[in-house]
Amino acid sequence: MSIITFIGAGQMASALTFPAFENGHEVRLVGTPLDREVIDELRHSNYHINLKRVLHDGVKYYQVEEMEAALEGAAAVLGGVSSFGVDWFAENVLPVIPSDVPLISVTKGMIDREDGSMMTYPEYWESTEAGKALSINAIGGPCTSYELADKDHSAVAFCGRDMETLKFLKELFSTDYYHISLSTDVVGVECAVALKNAYALGVTLAVGLAERREGIGALHYNSQAALFGQGVREMRRLLKLVGGDDDNIVYGAGDLYVTVFGGRTRKIGTLLGRGLSFEKAMEELSGVTLESIVIATRTARAVKAMAVAGKADLDDFPLLRHVDAIINDGQPVDVPWEKFEITFEK
Image (cartoon, rainbow, N blue to C red; front, side, top):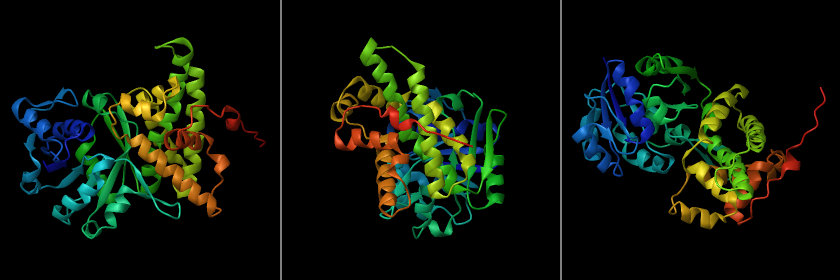
C-alpha cells in the first residue's frame, strides 16, 4: 500500500480517487482555496457536491492549509487543478512536494509563446525553480469524471520523461476498468488532448445551427461529423507542427468525441450556432471563463505567429480560424464549409 496525495478536489481528480482507493492505497484529497465547501461536505458525508457522487469511505480529506501534513509519507502526488489554477499550483504546491515524489497532473492546456511555439503545462512547471527538481507527469485521453467514477471502461495515456516512473504510476491507478498506456512523448499527448477543447466548440456549432433552423432539440449528425472530421484533420496538422507523434491523435480525437456530448463547451458552441453573439452567449453562461475559449485563442495566436515565421499555412486551419474570429473578433457563425474540401491523389 502507498500513500497518494491528491491536491485539488476538482471532478477529475476526485474521480481518480476511485481506482487509487480500490487498489488498496491510502488516498488523501486536499482542496484548493476554491474547494472549501467541497471538502467540508466530503468530511461530513463523503458526497462530492460537484461530481455528484459518494466517494469511498476511508478517503481522507484536507483543507488547503493542511496540505503539508497530507504530503507526509506520500509516494506520489496527483495534481487536480484546472488550467486556471496552473500558476497557483506552481507557486503554492510545487515548492512543498519532496523531490523524490513524482507528480502526475490531470490539468489540460497549452501556453503559446511569442514565436508561435506552444508549451505544455508540465514543461511550464519544469521551468520554475521548484519544478526543476521534480518528476512531472500528466494524464491525457478521453475520460469524463462522471463515467470514470461509475467504472465505465476508460483508456488514457500517462506521459512523462522517465518510463520507469510512468510504470510505477500506472501500478498505482490501473484497474480492470481504468486502462493506461504509457508515453514519453509529453508534447504529443498534452497537445492532442488540449486542442480538443477548441475543436469541441467548433463541432458543437452544428448543434446550434440545426436548432436555429428547426427548433430546440433538433439534431443533424452529418454536419457534426463533418466538423468533427475537420477538427481531427487540423489537430493532426498541429501535432506535426509541435513535433508530436501522429499516433497521439487517438487521444485527441477520443477526447474530442466525449467533449462534444456535454458540458459548458457544448453549451457555448450551441448558443453561438443558434445565432447569439459571443458576448450574449457568455452572459447566458453567467460570464464563466471557459477552457475552450482560452485554448482556442492561444492556439490561433500561435498558428498566426508560426505563419508569420513561415512555419505554418493559415489555410490549413479554417475551422480554428473561424472559431477564433467568432470569439475574439465578434464575427457571426458562418462555417466555411468549402474550405474543408481537399483534393488527394496517391
